[in-house]
Length: 364
Ligand code: 6MZ
Image (cartoon, rainbow, N blue to C red):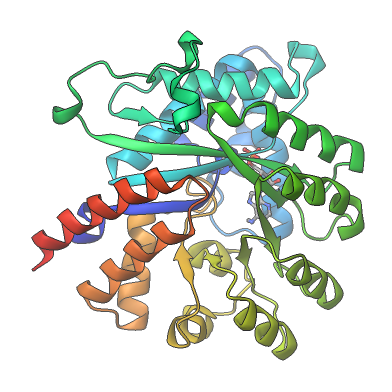
């Protein structure tokens, strides 16, 4: 496990509200319990329960959202989640989250994302690079665009790159999805790099989100889709035909889908623990990682919801190494290859390639 922790890693599929520490969730639940707003013992039971079906996971998210959807808490969880990833040597993370409206807290989708950005600025254990580094942005004089939390000398501080993906929840309407895409465009200068389609896969129709996803693409935002998390042959075909920049999961693919995926070379975000815990894949030996890896299809290991599934990026690499017989070199290569599938610009890719080349020397 040690070396899985110490090697640099890239995380491309992490939902903010799924990545919260249990201790934070319990503290928040206790706070609301003390105020008589929730029944703490019931919520505690839901938070600490270990095995959950996919349907139960979405019930848990409804509980989590009650606990977290105010500005201060969104800022707090963002800070903690980024610090947790940095502490296990994740050097680049794409954090995805669904912008939420909560009228009772005066929260709009816009102010939700502002609170997330505040969380990135509040990180203290590591330097956070979340502002796109293009020449054009360097000339802007907005003080908020100055490098975020460089409190110490760059050379002596650890650094993590963070980019944001705004998620469209499958419960949303076309208009709400479009609003999220407009927000992503507005927030591009603050590190929003793309759009994700997620939420309960048993809910909603592909055609509902398509106009917003097409618009995102026309405007140059990258798109990743939760695809094949439940059996839905028609939707999987439609999603692959859309040619997203990446897809997540791909658990319930049939022969035709594999063929289409492999010829398209769309990178797949694989979440081993999540898939096993939600019974989307019967056992680790049966996981499609093996086939994709053997056929050299681009894949990246991710946590999905490190809090909900009690995992970490290092743990996902450890599971892959031990379950699929990967040596250190192969595991390191798997981690390094993820750099090629990030949504940030080429200057970030180049920086990350350098980080991995330096780390490779220590491996020899
Ligand atoms: C699909 C998932 C998910 O956006 O509130 N989410 N969507 N499949 C999954 N596999 C288990 N895990 C998380 O983070 C929580 C939200 O992310 C999506 C769901 O919409 C969930 O409500 P945010 O930060």
